[in-house]
Image (spheres, rainbow, N blue to C red):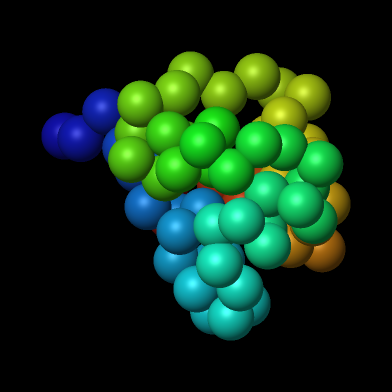
Length: 70
């Protein structure tokens, strides 16, 4: 089974692409750095709950919906 960070990163990337925005645009929307978003999508970051909530709010989804499929 893949590491949870990789699975979460794939979920974020998939949702971001469906939103039709670049990593930089998405990072600005979340109030996070673009390189941080890139690290999340590559599964390199152990994301804090605060930042997970920011990502979910940017996607306009609940935390449980963001984790669905992770």
